[in-house]
Image (tube, rainbow, N blue to C red; front, side):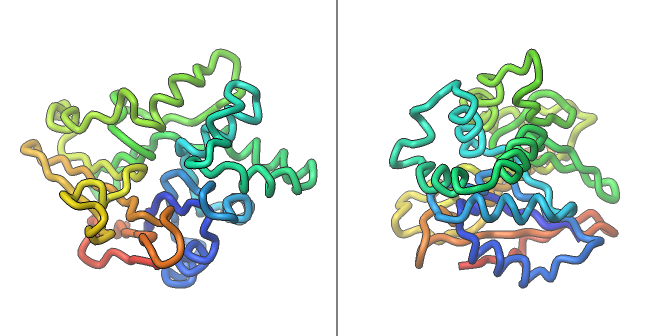
Length: 248
């Protein structure tokens, strides 16, 4: 089975509950679409656990990108702003051994940014946010010579690629594709975000493509928001939204 979630934001207890609920097997794959860290206290703990699980695949989110920008000296301000919640993550990172720090940096350096899956004829595109306009997998390669870290920033913040209209104009050979993302709390789509339910948001386009936002507000913390997880059946290729798992 394929499992997909996003935006855990340092809440190890919800991450742990999720692993128990899905009873992740070696034959399964769990994709986490970025923002494993920040706001909650245990983002580093989550990353260290993911590193030890070859079938848990992380993605670069804007918070992981801010961490890398800070640690490599490109931007030493944004990550530590109160709203971004990087201070607790930095404290935990600084307590690690040199070897564990290196493990995390090497992991984030090679982490996935965009991944395409074709499962039993069904096409999926997985990203932290937005619609990527190249039809190929993309990896971070933050420290590689020639990498444009600003381009990565645009991708994981959605400054350019977060354009849902692009879904409606996908080339015919790519339709239908289901785009699975996080980043934008789903309650923000509601007329009154303070009264909204934290549930997955979907949109279907005339060309058969779908947009699915999985960020159900886990970052809001205790008593608020949920960690959502959906499945793709590897035999049928079907995405099961009706039986989505919500962890609070």
